[in-house]
Amino acid sequence: MSDQSAQLEWRDEKIPVSTRFDDPYFSLDHGLNETRHVFLAGNDLPNRFAPGFHIAELGFGTGLNLLAAWQAWDAAGQSTPLRFTSFEAFPMSAEEMKRALTAFPELSEYAERLCTAWAEDPTLATLEGIKAEVILGDARETLAKQDWTADAWFLDGFSPAKNPELWDADLMSGVGMHTNAGGSVATYTAAGFVRRYLESAGFEISRIPGFGRKRHMTVGHRPVK
Image (cartoon, rainbow, N blue to C red; front, side, top):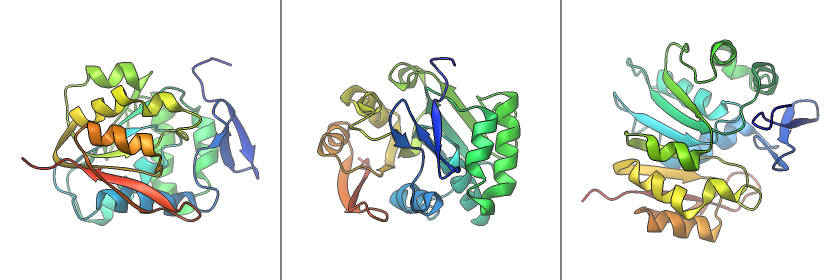
């Protein structure tokens, strides 16, 4: 197995768990509800959706967050494609992704399109209906090369205690530099050092109730000057 591939085991035959980081890819309680609570509601979506809206993400994983955002975008009646850019260092295979996403039958129409495109090209160059791109490699290197800014960020790496590389000060600074004024960030973690790094990156940070058994999560926005 390639060192750059996802290394998985399956809990209850349906929930993928990273053996590299000893962490599940989505909530054991209800992954889709967690995505909607943390990343959509945490960024005040779909209320902020508008033509040209751009979501960026650290940690593509199963693609669940993309699918939830895509479904919400369509449900909001947006007629132009959502832009969604994600960073992933250890991509799943298309077969693993398809197996994982069977846990969310209400997303099956979108999941089928995603998995087909992923099998063809994991940068999602062939995925139609959404302007999506997955940038493969270490985000600490690849984010700095991007020339865009996003309206909302989903920070969804594995637990900061187990995957500190995706939460370090320089990377959070890069997130700030790649966020529009008035843009937002949300993450499931309430780790103090993550909040401090995001504040140093220019976000006004709040700790709010988390999903399920998680007491708190983190949201923030970049002030309009």
